[in-house]
Image 1 (cartoon, helix red, strand yellow):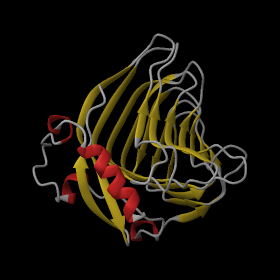
Image 2 (image 1 turned 90 degrees about the vertical axis):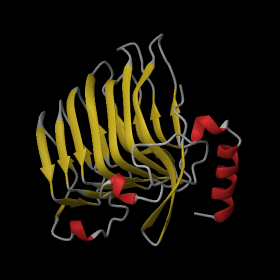
Image 3 (image 1 turned 30 degrees about the vertical axis):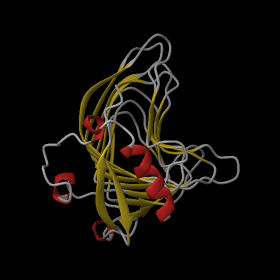
Image 4 (image 1 turned 180 degrees about the vertical axis):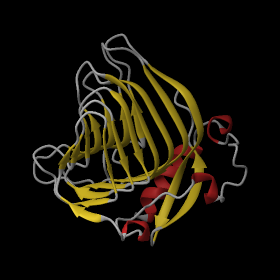
Length: 247
């Protein structure tokens, strides 16, 4: 990350009213990374050394995958789900990592997911695409890395997939992507958004996140706790200022 990008971003944040961005989180010490659990921020994190290499996967409804290393994208994404899925202790580095392809409950835990688009790609790390489906997407203890090439968003919720989006101990590593997190409701209903211990690491082309209301429905932020800017050098995190709750 270029120093001037980070300084410019902090300058914009500091222009906000002090009460908006200096809220105290439950973790009192801003430098206490223990608050954020154990988030992998590199494909080479030691926890994945025992993983088995795998081709791109399509999970059946309710399917589970764990302890895999995947670099193949397949025709859609490296991991494509049906209705409900559990993805644990996996690392993925491809053109698109996870496609949520149904409704139900989805858990992504202790993973490192990185997407690098090619040519005309619209690369997302995690995209929920199943128009009309409702579900719960829980992401925890996970690093989500993006790049500015043929890229869109780290996590993209749109196209009338609606439900609850619950993030805890998650790092969005920007790399110049449009947004780290982009969530829109739709005709299917409102979204419930829950963020606790979430880091956004610039640069982002536009902003760390975008929440837009669509189809007379709305995003409802039920939890916004310890959401912060961070920096990363040599795979080490340093915490920056708190980000304001959008609404």
